[in-house]
Each structure stands twice: as structure tokens, then as C-alpha cells.
Image 1 (tube, helix red, strand yellow):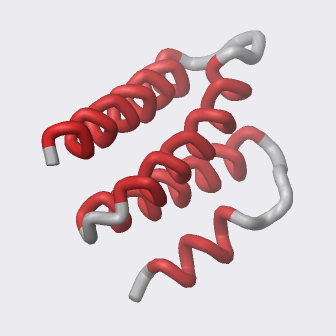
Image 2 (image 1 turned 90 degrees about the horizontal axis):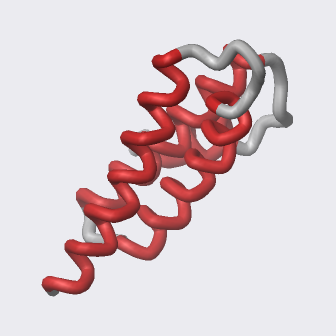
Length: 88
């Protein structure tokens, strides 16, 4: 499966902004896999890890609109996942 790849990539040490965007995307991909397989707690955990990276990028001086958009999308995914667990 893709899970081991994303786990290894997301666990890498922090780097420059572009590397951090890729790490955030890896966490988001893992979260999506966990969401699809019904592992909601794991999905939320990985979305939260994604958010923590994106908060740093989106809050940095000169942050792009794209970084802020990704942050908003990740926060929304947490809310949607939590909503899904409440309805189950």
C-alpha cells in the first residue's frame, strides 16, 4: 500500500518551505487513506499534523494565498471527519 511511503516521507526532518509543503501533503494523503478505510481517529491525527505544518507556512511573512487555502482545506477536513464520526 501507499501508507509506508507516506509515513516515511512525512517523518522526515523539517526543511525549507517547499519540503514542508510536501510533508504536509504526505500527512494529508495518509489522512485521506485512513478516512477511506474508516480509521477516523488516525485520519484526524494526520490532518492535525498537516495543519500544524500549514499553520507555520500560512502564518509566515509573505505566505502565499495557496498556503492559506491549503490550511483552510485541512481544517475543513478535520471538521468533516469529526462530523462523520458523530453520525456513525
